[in-house]
Image (cartoon, rainbow, N blue to C red):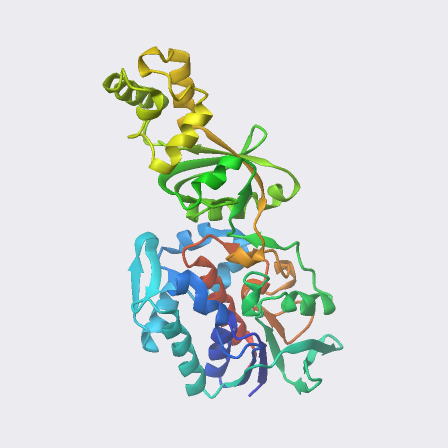
Length: 410
């Protein structure tokens, strides 16, 4: 039996603890908060999107950074394995739109309690309100951890599962990156990801709270297209959010750190420019003697109407029957290419995950053991791995946690 010390009691830490305890190891989890799974509690708006029930290709396609590194761990602990595990420990699950898997109760607390029960059943020791200050090695082997109060705890192996920098109120403040650097590991540049973006235009604030479904968004750096997708977005007082924009941030975040990017929103992606023009012509014909501002009510949500009228450049009081063809076509083009200037990312307080982390080339992909320090393992968001929304980031936590827990020699 080996003594396994785990720093961090989130998703990856708890799952690693269960995997290690199943192998008969003496497991000790050190969590700085007063309870386990504090970030897990708020995921999925408190419902906890456990994983995604897609096929394996779908899992890999959803990983944005270093997907090939996950080959062994994803196949060693698949999404179906995770679903079966939670069903086995009494947490019933259900599959919703987009193959997203949730607890049937819609309560993240049930997921956490299930993990806690399993840890207790396996005899794992949980040390709450216990922060790890340092991790020490000796001659290339893990030696001990040093707690905040100066107490030292020696062990045969240590799993770093401290999370990243997102939602720092839950305790994710970059401890794991500090530990890794102190032990000669490389930490790639970190930034918020799956995060809302800020915009330059003043009219954005007028649309605060407006959600648009079934729109298409493209993001450009000059003439180069960086991103394009279809879905749902939300306007906020500072910019744009919602699933479509959070996903976009994963792909354009690095570029957005250095300069402004151009977002183009297609408000009517189901219609070609020609069909949309025909639709606008019909609306105009039905309102020939009305003012422009009173003739476009069926095209947009109420909140968007005054903004679109202003951006069109057409006098709002102008009668529809005297609007020129050029004005109408410009209006159609505006609907298909609503321009917004992206100026930056929101900070870690609003980010679902952290992009960047411990360099995967320094980690064994089969066991999550460091290639630099024997007996030292990394799991979860502390690694340079990130994926799209939909349960994929938690799947990374479960799979890498499982690989680390099972990778420790018996």
